[in-house]
Amino acid sequence: MELTVPADDKQLETVLDFIHKQLPADCETDLMYKIDVAAEEIFVNIAHYGYKDKLPAGQTGTVWLTCTFENDLLCMIFRDKGIPFNPLSRPDPDITLSAQDRSIGGLGIFLTKKYMDSIEYRYEGDENILTMKKMILRNH
Image (cartoon, rainbow, N blue to C red; front, side):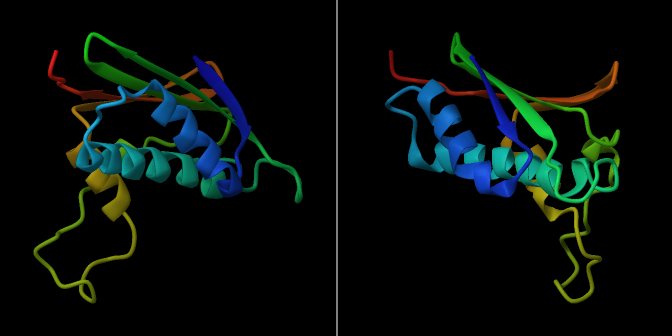
């Protein structure tokens, strides 16, 4: 299933609701939280930075989200036509440092990488394509 929304963080609830509809009814709360954190990080970054300086003021870009759940595997694919940016290319923050000593940024994508089983990025045509996968083992 695919969802098309404006790249506006006001659409975050719509995005999370769409993902939740793909999840099994017995999805554990802790696992759903991790999925939400990862999806929020990717979507909000696209909304805030993806189209920055690419569109005239007042215009909003678009995010396409494909979300499937098959054979215990959740697959979320975020696509946008914003500025090419691979969030996986950023170095992980040094979490051994205090918050005051760490540089700003990077913690959200660090958590996303920790919470998801796999994350892949590619730029194809004129689109950023970020794919996240998470196994959701269920009691069958």
